[in-house]
Amino acid sequence: MALKSGSFATFLIVCPFSTCDRLHGSLCQQSTCFFLGIIFSLFPYDYPLLWSGEPTPPSHYDYLEAHLRFLHASPPLIPRILHIVIFIGFAGLLAKLYKPSEANMLFDGASLVLYVCGVTVYIANIVKGLRLVSGGQYGADLATTPEEADQILGREDSLKVLAASNTILALVLVGVLILQAGQWYAERKDAQEYETLKRKRAETSPNKRERPESSPNLGRVSRQGSSSKKRQ
Image (cartoon, rainbow, N blue to C red; front, side):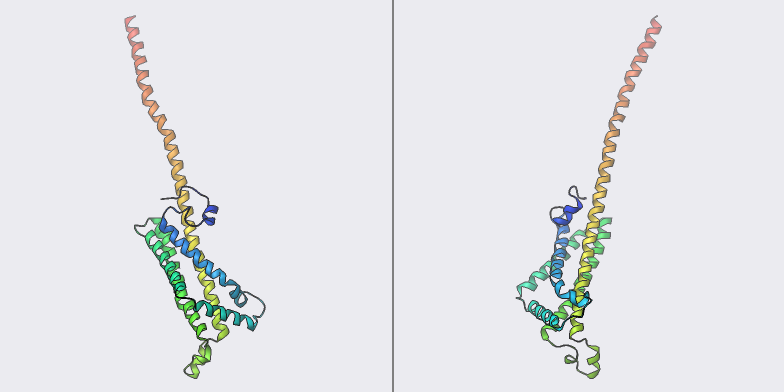
């Protein structure tokens, strides 16, 4: 069903519950916004590594490494909540694809692909990077042979790869929100077009009903006129 009320600005402000027609559509958006908030909290640490034109001071690497170690050493409840939110996002997308329409196949299918890509980046790069930072060993410390020492990234490069992974994950999640907003806009336009067609049909149907009612009266008048002429 298409959305019946609310503007696009309202959709962005109170995303996702008040303007979503179904609960499983809101689950995907809620989990995506949750992860974007976590990535945004890491942006002050990632910005000097990737986007600043000035050289990154060595002390910033120490701050970032201490922050990542603190995150990785958080109580078990924190990663459990994170994984539950990931599962909620999957559940919302899969529920939307149950008995899908054409719009669901296009928008929700692409959203599911991007969501899977985001989870892959999280498992392959971010989790692995957090374990590497917590271990405190980089480059030559992890190499078992002299040939591997040149292939394994050092401390600064490993932290830059982790920051780049956060940026990639943020772009993927923004893509999910864009697709969901596009689906909302397409369903809203379909609902508006349906309402206009419904009004036009309602306006034309009374005119069709009045025409058959007027024809018997004209027949009666013509019959009465012909009978009066015969009497005369």
